[in-house]
Length: 116
Image (cartoon, rainbow, N blue to C red; front, top):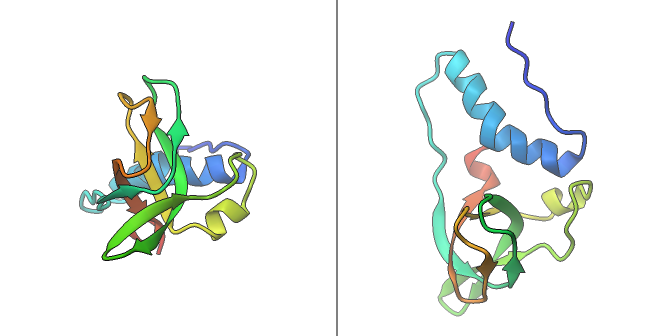
C-alpha cells in the first residue's frame, strides 16, 4: 500500500501535496497526466533565495494598469495558514534564480489549477 508523508506545518504540507503528492495520487488512480497550467506574469515584490533549489512563494494577483502583477503575501513561514487562505496561488522560483526583483517575469500557479 503506498504511503505519502507530508510535513507538519500547514503551508509546507499544502505545497508538498500540490507539487508531489497530488500528481502521484492521480497517476496511481489511473488518471491521465495533467500538468497544472502556469501563467506568466510580473513580480510585484522582491525576494532572495539560495540558488540550487526551487521555492514556492505565496502570492495574489493585483491589477497594475492593464497588467496583472503577482504580489507576495507579507509574511513568510511554513506555519502561517492565513498565507494560504489569503493568497491566490504560488509564484514558482526556479533553481537557477537567486533573486526576484519587481517587474521580473515569473510563473504563477493559481490554486484553482490544483485544488478544486
